[in-house]
Image (tube, rainbow, N blue to C red):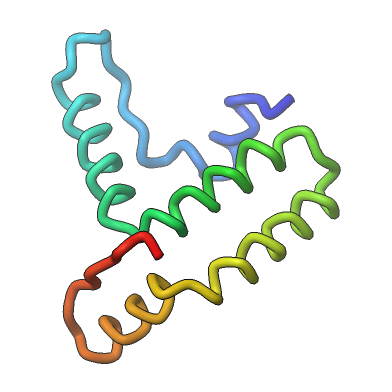
Length: 98
């Protein structure tokens, strides 16, 4: 299992906030994270989520192979091409989910 203190010690928890369930700053941070994720391409987001969830129960070498395989799938999408074009043209991408 992946322990919270290990994540914190590895620097994965540096952006977190403490809070008591009433929203406040924690809600603002959570909403900002959700908006940043939503602005990404839907295929890339879905494959990243799949890599994390499926990779949790795999040995590291297999999890990294899964991530590589999913990344290769992403390379053949129209959204990936749109992301590259948008970056080169210095504009926000218009992802289609294809």
